[in-house]
Length: 243
Length: 145
Image (cartoon, rainbow over all chains, first blue to last red; front, side, top):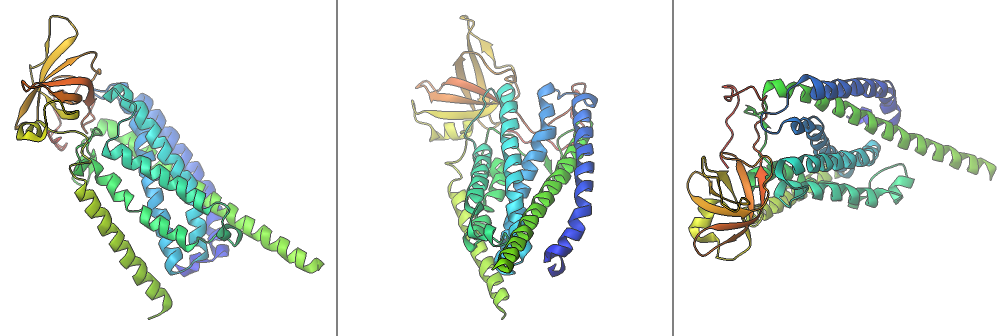
């Protein structure tokens, strides 16, 4: 693991990987959207509105997966002080927040025709909204701080914040099991799926596609932070030479 | 013990502590964070007459009766163990129907009828094509509300 904590080694892998993740991700998302909108039937009860699940489910998965990786990066920052972990956490926060917002928005759009309401304060919706605020807090905490000027590492406070915020992830996941809620229970569990295969397969395409896109965005953002660091270092050197 | 091992142990202990606190808080919230009460809870005396609350349950088969004013409906909400009659005046969501889940805002009347101000349809976790009359064998059964 230490080998990849070196920014030069990281760039040697990230540079060729980024266009592949981006290209394959875009293709899969487009294929999944096409299949989900035209190739599968609507749901027996909800009709056409069920198709929003091909965006809603990947968005929820990436919003929660994003914070899980952000918390892992925070842990690595706290314990091993790898320079790349703080950069990764900073790079994950914005797309993570974006997908969380997308999850809430698509859920709301689906909720109106299905439940009859845009928003209710049930366990699932409330805990997901808390995740959105956690992301906003992390971005506010780390944007323009001391660490950003010194290469992108996280302050101890920000790393602890990332770890403590991770408590919300299992709460979101279990919210529809622990408490009775307006949101339905989990459709896809270890025991199988209650989404029929005829409707399920485009979800595989969009789930993988959005995940690859997420990876591409994170790599691009990490590369930008590293490039910024190098520019700053070079400017400092130039300034020193002039003295 | 190296410094980074100390930090690792410290971080993990802190994480376990915070996770434990989270689980305790969540389990303490068990009843408070519930979005609605079930007919069993209502009949078990968990609803005072006139107290604002939400009632959730399945709409019993054959129970929806439209009243003579054309706007008011009466039906029975059930969770398989107990049932509560519900009265509602207004427009229901498209997905409201018999043998499917619903959540109603309102209050209990002294005669044991729940008077709803608003009704939401609850969707279950099954998604399937319309031509399928029966649930396929390989799909896990949806739990009752």
